Length: 155
Image 1 (spheres, rainbow, N blue to C red):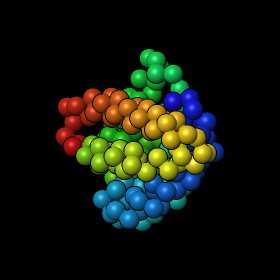
Image 2: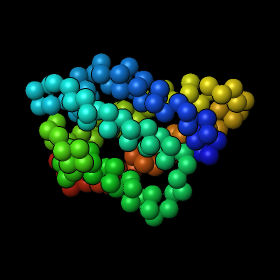
Image 3: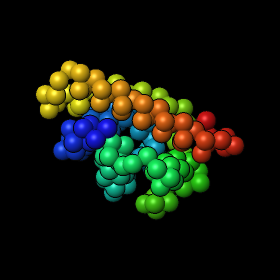
Image 4: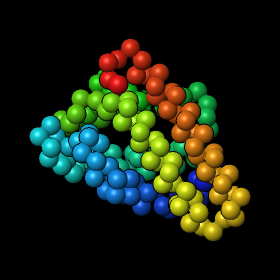
């Protein structure tokens, strides 16, 4: 994953813009999680959460997967549940992001990351290895996030 981190480091803003503006914004049931209850944009919230999303890409690739990283995954998941959603930025939006939306979007992130991993002209084998490592990491993170949703009716 270290190589993926180096490859993606200067592309995180572009990746998040692709995901947010190019995909999420066009799917109303996903876009609503970054909007007010009335459906209005919350630009400051989006800007701050985009920065966290960019950092998450780097952390996915570069942070050691140790107990602190597991705690970090717990915090990420909590910020998507009714326990903590909207608290970090003090906004009013949807009360939680349903786990089904997260599961579906992980597939989108996996599908779209390959072009960014290939952007630095690494060998086909290196790109494939980075891609497999990325997908495995997201599967692990999803498994950890799912545990946080256990016992909540936030499917």
